[in-house]
Amino acid sequence: MRFNAAFAMLVGFGAVIPATASTSAENTQNIVRVTLGDHVYDIPSNYGSYVTSGIDTPKVGYGGFKFEVLLPDFTPRIANNSAQLDAVGWYDQLRGLIEAFPKSQKQIDNKAVLSNFLAQPWFSGVIPVSSHGYRIYTPRLKSFNDLRAKNLPNGDVLVMQCSQDWGLVVFPDCTVYEHWQGLSMIYSFSRKYAEQADSIDQRSGT
Image (cartoon, rainbow, N blue to C red):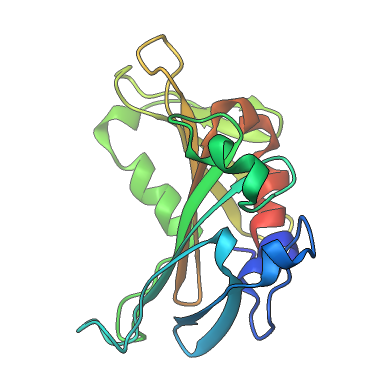
């Protein structure tokens, strides 16, 4: 799991996060203070919205932040791109949610996520096909998403599901699942960016 690079500037881990696309007043004038676990972050509000915190919910220790940016440059919301971000479907949008869970809650990692997916009956006996460094598992039933996994240099694994592009889904998308030290990050983007998922993942965090 990686929460560094461009998204580390968003989620920060101990720093006030600068806007990645621009340093204009429009990008930085409104700051949202977000509590995720034991950490507090200041995030420009045009990156997304605060979900909740341990202060205002019975789930003590929980916190979340919904985010949306435009690929390929992780551009946050500004006046001239709001229509792009608000468009229905998946074009260049990346949307996601970061959550921090109570320390008492059982933690899982990306390898466990992959194992849980592969344990589903529609992946039983499926032999993966290699493509661009990914192992692609195509489910036996077309109504289910395909599963993609890629081993990372740090020993972790990138886990991604992509909706099937058989004309049944108007806007096929891919979703990446990340888990690390009590944090969970799930984010989605257009399937057209599927082959760039590892570079997106590197910019989404370390």
